[in-house]
Amino acid sequence: MALKERISNTSRRQWIWFIGTASAWFLFSLWAGNLWLLLFIFFLFDIYITKFVPWTFWKKTKNPAVRKVMEWVDAIVFALIAVYFINTFFFQNYQIPTSSLEKSLLVGDFLFVSKLSYGPRAPITPLSFPLAQHTMPIVGGKSYIEKPQWKYRRLKGFGEVKRNDIVVFNFPTGDTVATNMESVDYYVLSAYNANGSEGIKSDRRTYGEIVYRPVDRRENYVKRCIGLPGETLEMRNDSVFIDGSFLPNPKLSQHNYFIQTDGSEISSKVFSEIGINRDDYVAQDMSGQARMQDLAYADSMSMANLGLKDVSGNKGKLYYNIPMTDEMVEKMRSKPFVWNVIKESEPAGSSLYYPLDYQQGWTRDTFGPLWIPKKGTTITFDTDADYKVAAYERCIKNYEGNDFDYRDGKVYINGQETNSYTFTMDYYFMMGDNRHNSADSRVWGFVPEDHVVGQPLLIWLSLEKDKTWLNGKIRWNRLFRSAKK
Image (tube, rainbow, N blue to C red; front, side, top):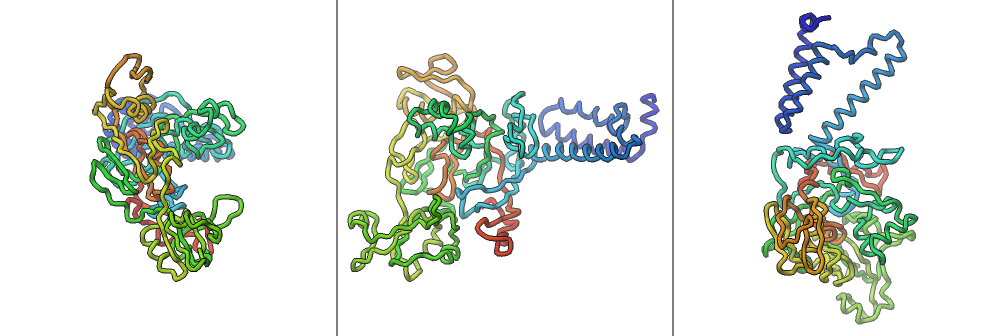
């Protein structure tokens, strides 16, 4: 059938579908800033109008089994393409896996994450299975094909990352992963291993295979943005300062506390009433016992250092590592059997903090000052070169793709000796609201702009893992609440 005849036989309904679909695709191509995408309109024209390619040949088959199977295949392929498109450019679902943002966001919260808030990121690894971040469900193995790798580009969105925004992003140091310990930062593992990264790679029985993941295939994390590009962040005695100005803690932020009782044991009912989950007061070992210590044999010096009571020889019992908000602390203090509630402090040198290979005695409560890189800003290596290399080498090398070498006190970038570097991306400093139980920028450093995924808008489902479906499993009071606070 000739082209002219095919067009003349086209129904009004077909033309409406074509014009509507082509118009939507035209607007999308303009938004994406890629006019090559307009060539796809010829493909749509054939689907709806000319039909030179028999896209629905199976509908004419006389075999009902073939027709039924192909109907399912057609529906599944369409659904996968639609899901991939929606997930990439508009929104996705995200479940809170850890307590790092409690009590702002709880473990078991399911979030509706908007890609439009900061502008969707164009695919970097375009060939991937929909809804699978990096591993195929059930069968295992990679859910993506590593090539091609496209350059980072972000489409226009409704705004930019602002201070105190809760942000979903790809885990920056998730570029390298030990498959037997995927939940543990590879670089932290290497820092604690006596033989560094070589010790990790040589012990496959313990750590498994070491794999590399592209930017958009790295694990998704969610934290609160505390520091913006170009700012200097510092923590003094658990208080955050930005460019020297005090930044109040989020309203529902938590810290770890010691709780000293008169010898009474705190029941699970009391913990639950105050809002403390079982995992927060039970030791993380096979015993499943509460984080509690009998102080009967504690020495007086240790008790004095912690500020604990000793009443006529009764030293009471001590609960430790209990995360609470300010409101929860006041509720706990009001209990008649509670003697003391004391915020925990961390001794310098007890844990590793960023930059991992240049320890300065920083802690989770006393950190910095640390300058956050900003696009177009130049740093020089003429002073404090050792520190600056430790703090910004990863940005220059891993995130911005340069060859970097530091030897004999001199910096070499892309083979050329240099005394300065100008950043090509913005960076952010992210922290959890559960300040003493959060692996965040204090440990693994900055979040580059190309790792930003989107902003959680609302909680569409919330499940309490410590309870049954018939006994409060669904947190009804959290459904359809804003996730931006």
